Image 1 (spheres, each protein chain N blue to C red):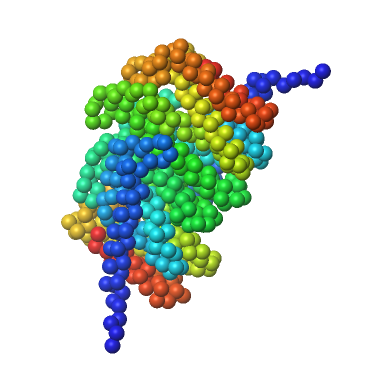
Image 2 (cartoon, chains in turn yellow, cyan):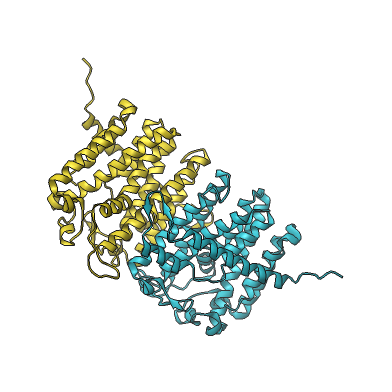
Amino acid sequence: MRNRPDPAAEFDIRLKEAAAETETMLAQLLAAECVAGEIVRPKRLIEAMRYASLAGGKRLRPFLVIESGRMFKVPRRRALLVGAALECIHCYSLVHDDLPAMDNDDLRRGRPTSHRAFDEATAILVGDGLLTLAFDILARPAAHPDAQMRIDLVMALARAAGIGGMVGGQMLDLAAEGRFETRRPQPLDELGVSRLQAMKTGALLRFACTAGAILGGADASARRAVDRFGAALGEAFQIADDLLDVEGDPSMVGKQTGKDAAANKATFVSLLGRDEARKRLHSLVARAQAALSRFGPAAATLREAARFVAERRN
Amino acid sequence: MRNRPDPAAEFDIRLKEAAAETETMLAQLLAAECVAGEIVRPKRLIEAMRYASLAGGKRLRPFLVIESGRMFKVPRRRALLVGAALECIHCYSLVHDDLPAMDNDDLRRGRPTSHRAFDEATAILVGDGLLTLAFDILARPAAHPDAQMRIDLVMALARAAGIGGMVGGQMLDLAAEGRFETRRPQPLDELGVSRLQAMKTGALLRFACTAGAILGGADASARRAVDRFGAALGEAFQIADDLLDVEGDPSMVGKQTGKDAAANKATFVSLLGRDEARKRLHSLVARAQAALSRFGPAAATLREAARFVAERRN
């Protein structure tokens, strides 16, 4: 009798491998000695960009690019490069969100945040530099030999990361906290929470899934299926995050919990209650997995990813 | 006898026309009612982005895209769109550079800076949003029907605006001011000033000139000629700026003068003296104009642009 692979064990191995390879790729892209033409990259800026982007972590977004790409036989090196570009965007958003004028956080994954380890001006430029570098990376022929595919990726990432996506979502989040005119929290209803989350965190996760389909030249119908998976996974990710904030153990979650309640912040958990939120989470996982049924065993790891996102403890 | 056109008068008309059309294009791109898919752009963010980018000004960079494009018969609408993308980058850099943690400026062109008119968090997101929008715009088929040309523009702009270009140049500028470890000014030598300026302001001006050649599908040799023009013009622009800081009338320049000397900042003027700097400026204008000699009368307006950049009073 042959050993049947255990999907969960297989998933763990693949997730760790992708994280290690992403780290290596980012380190190469941000090599200190790197030059572009006759112009030299300033040393302190590179150091701070490495600090902000080589801090380990699950690298969930690059992993999703790699795994959705694997379904469409995308060469791993291309998926890694696109995953690294996406991770540049994710890391820049953490650096800017941590700034004193934004969430004013001193710690991130147990280390001083960028503006604490360096200074505010450097942190602002680190974010601007990582954001710009993401598009530099996507424009390289190594990402895909076909210029049409590369420009499709540029467009999709710019939309996911921009004012109709992540940046806009952060703005809605600050507004809901009452940071602007009103100076008191503006609790959102279910539609408001759903929109905010789809923009702030969902859009990049969704792009991660779609990117593999773009790189693989998937047809419109396959692309829509992967997009449905990404949308459900993104929503599940955020509900799991909200549940962790209520139920999680700070020592395992790796950050302070109870922040949403303290800030009087509307989430699916505060709006629906924990039981309903958990039911919704399970149905989103089922919906995400169903979206991939047509791909058969090739989608086994991505289906595990939906479970992982829902059940994660940090 | 036919009237011979006066190049300087012709230049003024073209510059004003380009500025007005750029303003209209940016206003359309940042229309409040604009939506991307089902996702809505937050109102306050759009208002703040319009505030930061619809403040008038010479619009020199879009003008250079349009005029270099005109030499290669680029449809005006395409050049305008690419010029608007470039102006998004320029405007984002002003918003971030004005922040308290950076240059801490309260006024820009006689109006409160973005973080003064709105708040710091909004200003950070305005910058991030404009930077991302620039690449969204370049990826649109309206910029050029050929994906290869669009991805060439994305690559060239990402390099000009990134850590080997504008962002890196701002970092070098802060370092020279003694903002980091040393806490005292680190006066640069001639090579250091030249590199800083080529990165901080030169790279975007150079991109502006090259963009027209890319859009027009110019051959490698024509592209190099336009690039040489852009490099000389960029350097001339900065020396003129340094001279204005020493000699300019604040009421005409529209900003405080004498800032470089007060900050003990090395410039070509402080390193070479005013007379030598002025000589260098004239030779750069001549070099810029000579780079375009092969294009004959089609380059008349661009040649005037080099003179304008050197002689401007604000």
